[in-house]
Length: 72
Image (tube, rainbow, N blue to C red; front, side, top):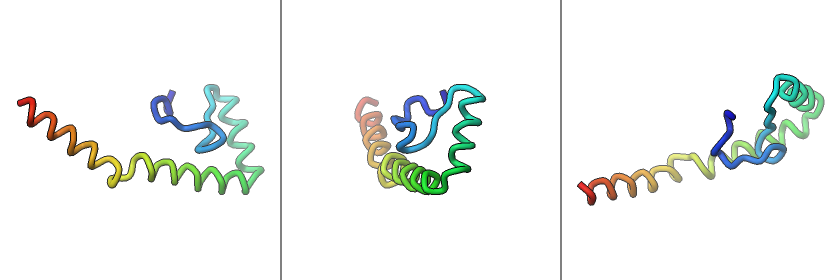
């Protein structure tokens, strides 16, 4: 539920789990696999930067403000 709406892919950008046991399994998997940890860290950071960095968000926010001003 915590990642709904983010368009992340489990195993590509992060690991997702819907249960406590699934979460524990994912943590164990990462603890045992440094390569996977590194891959997910880099892919997750790249995803956040390309989707949520201020340089990406601000133009959309400015468009919203312009639309509100035009409709007022």
